[in-house]
Amino acid sequence: MSIRVPRGSELPDHAFGWGQLVYATSGVGRVTAQSAHWVLPAGRALWVPSGVRHVLHAVTALDLRTLYFPKRRPPLRVSTPTILHIEPLLRELILRAVDVALQLSERTRRLRSVLYDELSTARSEELQLPMPIDDRARDFASLVLSQHDFTQPLAELISQVGASRRTLERRFVEETGISLGVWFRQARLQYSLLLLGQGVSVAEVSDACGYSTPSAFIAAFRAEMNGTPGTYFSR
Image (cartoon, rainbow, N blue to C red; front, side, top):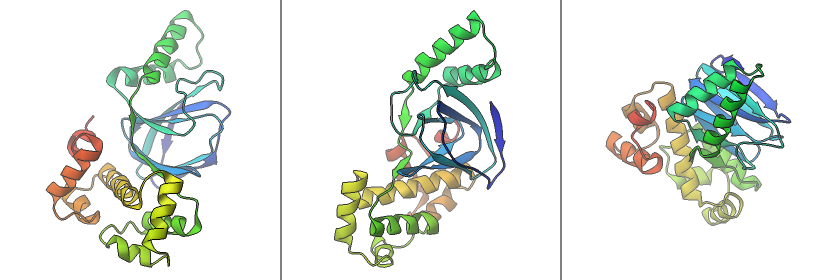
C-alpha cells in the first residue's frame, strides 16, 4: 500500500492483527507508543509487531509504503517497534512487493521469500527513546520532548519538575535501562534528526541542540550514528 501523509497530520493510535512494515520513501516522521518514541527518517523502515498500538506523526510530508505480514510468520522476532536501515536491494524488494501485493503467482512467492530473508538480516538503528513510567520521571521526559530546549543545563530542567536528580537517575535506570544523561543525549539526537529531516542546516541544528560548535555536533552525531549528518540523510 502507498500512503501520502500531509505535514503535521497523524495516523492516530492504532494496532493491527498483522505485523506491519512502514517504509518512508521521503520525509520524516515520529512514532509514539506507550513505552517509547522513535524517529522515522526517509530511507528507513519501521517494523511494528502485531498488536502494538502506536501513533505516526508526519513532521514533514511523508510518502510511505506499507506491507503486512501474518502474525504467525513475522520476518523479525522482536516484541517492540524497530527502525531498520534499508539497503538498496531491500528497498527495491519493498517497492516491488507493494506493487504486486495482490498478485498470486510463483514469481511473487519467490519475491516474498527473498524479502523475508533480507528483512530478517536487516540492521536495526538506535532511534528508540524509551519512556519512564514513574510520574516525576515521565513529567521530566514530557517537558524535554515538548519544549525541545536543549540549551538549558540539565539541572535547570530537572528543577522544573520538582524532583531531585538522584531520584530521576534511579528511576530512569530502573525503568528505561539507561541513565538520565544518556536518555537526554538520545532525546537531543532524536530532535536533531527531526530538524535535519526538515532541511534545517547543520549550523542551526547545532545551536538548537545546545552544542558549542557545528563541529562538536557533527562529532557527537558521528559517535552515535556512525556517519555525519550529510551522509546519514543521503543514504
